[in-house]
Length: 498
Image (cartoon, rainbow, N blue to C red; front, side, top):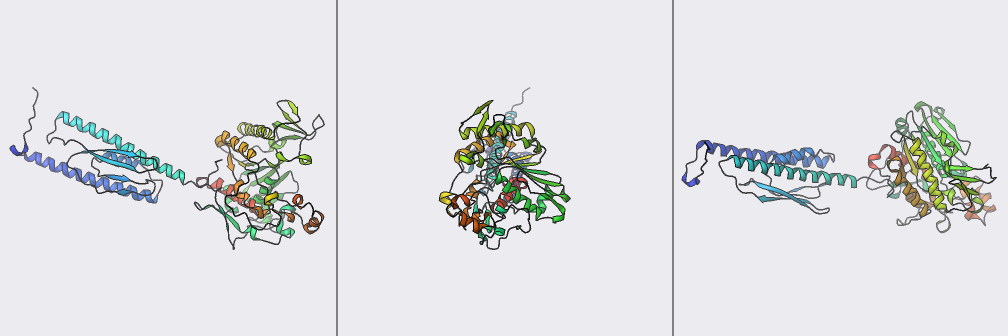
């Protein structure tokens, strides 16, 4: 026999004491639930304010559990919250949210029909459906909050290659040519007699993050038992000398072994840390055959440099190639180019450079386990000749809009290749920050006999003054500071090509 439930108007029926008690319990439950939600929401907001990595799943479960929320507007979820007065409603309300690009997430309340005081089976099913729909919307809302928080964290990621040079009167270099006796003469500007010191007092800063100062002892501890190779032209040798001096000055000289006499290979070993940093001369990264059977100097675009056999097994690799590709006339290193089995008299430099980088990229893919080895490609180091001549320059370029890509077509090829390689290689993008530093080149102080040389080449100073390499201590120390930050503080750095 089917049971029929008859509901009469309240004014005509005396309420059952049990029904009254049930209603009171329901209201109490609602109040408790509301209070629990508000307390949890406030706690989540406080935690998120102090810890950006708060687990949003707590918010999800809390929002989904509570059936009563007042009008809530969340503004700029990543940084602040604003809550409007809320109260217990007589009837249930559904929640919907809407968003605009970079705008607030808005939760709105919509009236639902009041539930009857006496619940039938159909009523119970309706309540369950309403609760399920509410939970689904709540989870969507929590997901939107999490999405916004993650986007905010990504936006705050610091790019250490963007910033500005700041002059600091009390700034001192971390080594000198006396402390680091194996510096090349042409890099030892102070030892050669350069009279000014201001170029050593400029510090690269990004106002959005704290770029760590290079710490030689910390670097060695983190690199204990490891091997670093620096491969490329004389600008990468410039960087190797800087890194070697930063490390050498951090340990007792008796605990280091240094072989820096040759131009093609240099090495420093820190004995107590079982650490090695080496330089390999390879200005093209591919093979320049000076004894080709044709009798000509041949640059083989599809054959890697012979010393690549020694590159294998390093834990950190830093490559560069650029300047030697655009040398003209008597300075051009090759007679012929070898590509796809043919010897070529002429080929567009951009195409030749692109082919060589693809050969290098294939070697990385085939020979380097990038889950164990960190590979960097350093961007092109700018020169300061002609219009922005480094001769007699003692101050950096202060125009922040200044940009002189060297040359732009070559830079585009590098960055396209790095993007194609994805996570296999990281970009040590020092070009822009170095362009400001016309004051940091050796210029005429490339030699201890600079007075004699200036007199000898006074009509050819634009050619004699070295406006390509950098004084040490000097700018390459900043390159290595950013290398240090990129290796060990990757959560605060950005090495993208953008």
